[in-house]
Amino acid sequence: MAVSSAILSRRVAGSSCCRLWCGVPRPLIHIRSASAAESGARKSDEDHQWEAAGSMPFSRARVGSFFQDQPVLKNPFLEDALLRGYLKRHLPQESSSQAILSDLNAFGERVAKEIDILGRECELNPPRLVHFDPWGRRVDHIVTSAAWKRLKDLSAQEGLVAIGYDKSFREWSRVYQMSKLYIFSPSSGLYTCPLAMTDGAAKVIQSVGVSPPVEEAFSRLTSRQPERFWTSGQWMTERQGGSDVGTGTETVAVPQTDGSYRLHGFKWFTSATDADMTLTLARVQDRSGATTMGSRGLSLFYAEVSRGEDGRLRGIEVQRLKDKLGTRQMPTAELLLDGLPAYRLSEEGRGVASIANMLTITRIHNSVSAAAAMRRVLQLARDYATRRTAFGKLLKDHPLHMQTLARMEVETRAAFLLVMEVCRLLGREESGLATQLDVHLLRLLTPVVKLYTGKQAVTVVSEGLESFGGQGYIEDTGLPGILRDAQVLSIWEGTTNVLSLDVLRCAARSSGMVLHAYFEHVKSLLTGASGVSSLAPAVKAVAGALSELEQFVQLAASRSPSYLELAARDLAYSLARIYAGALLIDHASWKEATPQDTYAALRWCEQDLCLVASKQKRGCYDSSTSSQDASLVYI
Image 1 (tube, rainbow, N blue to C red):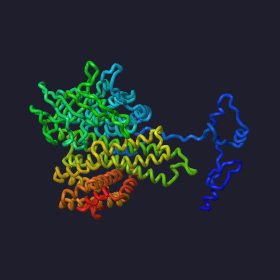
Image 2: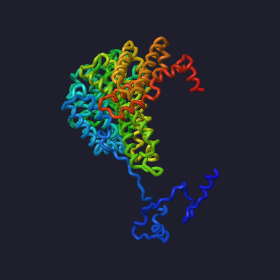
Image 3: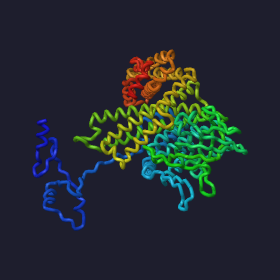
C-alpha cells in the first residue's frame, strides 16, 4: 500500500498533472495535432515549448502519433502448413494433384485480395425485408447487398459445389472441395451456409434419383455457370420442433390432381431464404384431410421459389427476418407456406430417412467452417503478434503469449485433421471405394466431429479475440463477427446434446459395429507410428485412453439406457479426443513430418483423452445423478 501511495504521489517535472509511468523512462512522443493543421490556427507559447522538447501534451483535438498496425490477411493457403502438408501426403502423386494445389494457391490469393472485402461488405450491409411496394402491393422482397450476389456468382465460377459432383479427382474430389471451402469460409460473408444446403440438396436428389421434376434443379445446383447456378434452402424447423422434426412438424401437403402437392404451414427458421429452391418436410393429407403423426407421417418435398406475374411469391409470405446474434450477413426468415406448389421426393412417410444424406453433408460443412474459423483467427493473431509491442517487446517475444497461441494451434490442428478424415471417408464412399469399416466410421464420426469442432471453435475464437486486447472487442475491426458467427456452429445442424444422442443411436442401430470399426482403426493408426520413438509418449497416452474407452463401453452395455444417456456427451468428447490424437500421431509419423507435427501430437495427448472413463470413476452417471442435477438447477 505504501509503495502504491509513493507511486501515486510522484509528480512529473514540468507538468502540473500526476502521471503513472511505473518506473519506466518517459518516451518522447511526437503528437500529431489536428488543430495545428487548420487554416489560421496559431500555436501557443506552450505548444512551441513542447515541440522543442520533442513532445506535446494531449489536449482538445490533438491525438497521438502512434497508430497500431492492424493484422494483415495473407494467402490462407500459403499460410497453412498443415493443410499443404496434408494434401502433399494424401493426394496421389500425379498431375491432378498439382492442379489441385495450384488452384488452391490461386484461390487463396483471391480470398485475401478480393473475397475478404466482399464478405466484410455483407456484414456491413445485412439483408432487409421489403413487405410492400410503393403502391401497397405485397411483394416480400428480401434485399441483399451487391457483395452477397457477387459471392453467389463467384461460388459457381470456383466450383464450390460442383467440385464434389463432377468427380474429376475421383475419391479426392470431396477433400479438394472441402479444402477450398475451408479457405473460403472465414471470408465468405457466411455464403458457405447456402452452399452447404445447396450441396445437401444435390446429395439428396442424387440419392433418390436425378429425374423429372428435379433433373433441371440438380443441374443448376451443381453448375459452374453463374447465370444457371441455383442455391437451395432447407426449410425444416417449425415452432414446436427444432431438432425434433418428427413430433414438431405441422406443415401439411395437399395432393393435387396432376400428382403435385400444395404445402400449408409455418416454417419458423429458414436459412438462406433468398434461395432458388428448397427441400422441406410435410405430412400428406389423405382424402379425409387426416395426416399421420410422428416421423412415420413425414415426407420430403421439393419446391421452387418463384414469383407470379403480379410480382408476389407463389404460395409464400415472408413474415419477418430473424434478428440473430451472428450470421447477420445471411437472410433467415419466418415463412408462411400458403399453397406452395411442391413435388414429393421421398416415398410417403420416408421423409426423415431421406434427409439423412443431407444431414451428413451439412454437418461436414459445419465442421469445415468450425476448423476454418479457428485457423483464421489464429492466422490473424500470429500476424498481429509480429506488429504489436507491449511492455517493451513484441507479443511474439513474450513466452506466455506464444504458449497461448501454441495451445490454440494444437486445437486447430486436431480439428482440421478430424474434418479432413470425414471428408476423406465421404469421398471414398461416393466413389464406391469404401470398405465396410469406412462406412461405419463415416456414420459415427460425422456427428462426433460436428459436435466437437463446433465447441472447439467458440473456445479458440474467443481466445483469439483476447489476443488482440481491446481491439478484439471493437466491432469495426471485424474481429467480433468471427466469434458471433462461430457461436452458431454448435447450434445449427444439431446441438451438442442432440448429436451426442445421435452417436448412441448410431451405435445401437449398427449393433455396435461402428464402435468396433472405430477401435480397429485407431489401433491401426497407432501401430503405424509404433516405430517412431519421439512419438512414444503420445502413442502410450492414446493407447491407454482407448483401452479405458473399451472398458467403459463394456460396462455401459450392462447398465440401463439412462446410464448411457447421461454419459453421451462425455462419450462423444472422448471419441473425438482419442481419434484426434491418433490422427495427429499418424500425421507426425509421416516421413516428411516436421518437428512441429510431433510437438503438436505430444501436446494434444497431455490432456484427459478419455473424459467418459474419468467421470465414470467419480460416479457422474450413477442413478442418483439426474435427480441431484435437477435439484441443483431448480433449488
